[in-house]
Length: 192
Image (cartoon, rainbow, N blue to C red):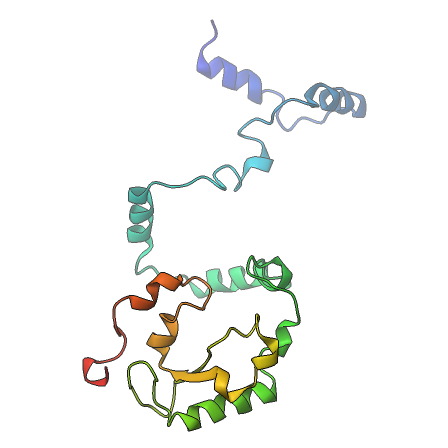
């Protein structure tokens, strides 16, 4: 039986050598239908895609990366690599896409509606009573996507602080059961 070193040596003996077109064609035919080796370039970066990591592995990776800053050159390289590529989870490719034109979200009518709702409510959160001129959200009681006829109806709007808006349950990533979660972690207790 050959040793590991002998196998590696014979595998690397012709690596990088120029081969004739006929030899390349025969090698290609011989490989058709066979699974790729784990060293094949097609596996680079894709080998672990889709696999779930254990929670302790995720915690170790997070701890190792916490506090690390990317160099300006690295940031520039990342930006250059992503420039010109479409975002994968925007528009029709996003899992929550319901159709329509994404540019219609904040037209002038919407901005006027939001300001009218906030003025009507005195820039005060209608759930917790927190009042502030800036940072308050105009919330659609009946969702924007499901009730297009009520989008600019003042009776379909209420003013919420950011924390109450996050826990209102009508937004992507927030389940409706989170409405009764912790009251207001982001707002000082004297405002609740």
